[in-house]
Amino acid sequence: MNGFHSFKRPRLGQLLAGALVLSFWNLPANAANDCTLGVQPILSEAQTKKAFQPLADYLGKAASKTCVVRTSPNFLAYWDGVRKGGMYDLVLDAAHFTDYRAQKQGWEILAKIPDTVSYSLIVSDQTAIIDVGELISKRIATLGVPSIGAARLNALFPNPSRQPITVEVESSEAGIALLRAGKVEAAILPTPFVSQQMAQGVGISVVLTTEPIPHIALSASPQLPAATRERLRQALLAADKTPEGREMLKAIGFEKFDPASSAIYAGQSKTLKDYWGF
Image (cartoon, rainbow, N blue to C red; front, top):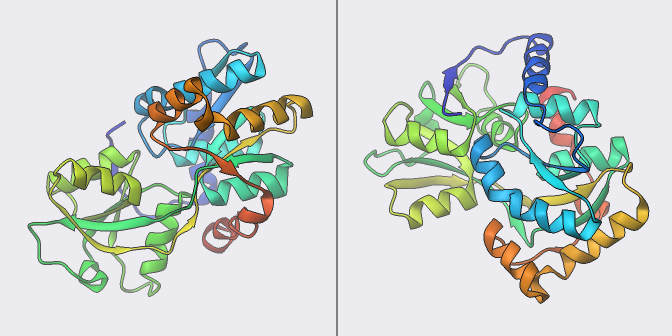
């Protein structure tokens, strides 16, 4: 999951065809599991499973089901699963995908991580880059289309003739590794991940931080019974009040879940339409 490549934009049909192939080999070993939890591929597949299986276990117990984390190798494969539907019962996802599911597929938003989230454009602290304009024709690592990171990078360079060289990575860890190795001049990655890296002493500087959007939310498929969805909602909102819930929250790195609704995320899926016509 640490591969990367510079790319010229291929045709949409080619991208989605590739994603379709990838999504098939990513089927879980036991497809008969009672419940699947999908998580957007900000981290590598191995890291995603490790980080969020405690959440899947907690949700499974609340729903009286066996619940496993189902991953995707990159955002194209993930987007293919979003469009087709039927791959997940529950999803912990970014604002634009959360709104898309709610508006287009009838998913119910159960709870969200508190506050907002943003992306940060970072460089090595050994460079003198302090302005976005200095990165024209330079290599910038970003998570793939149609991630929020890719959308935010596009927005930073609106002039088609004055663009950076986009280096697509399949996880935030891969992006930071390229920057540290000097293989890219910058990277645009989720701000919480950037903050974590800086706290660990990684030598990076923030050029800018993007406008915040609602933090990730957990949504439920309409195929789940309404009573099950409500049990899951109550379990999430009460997690910080019970020993079992607090243990789960500590494992996934969040303090609590807040109430959420489709109104909070309304309009966020416009990002998909504005940049890629989805």
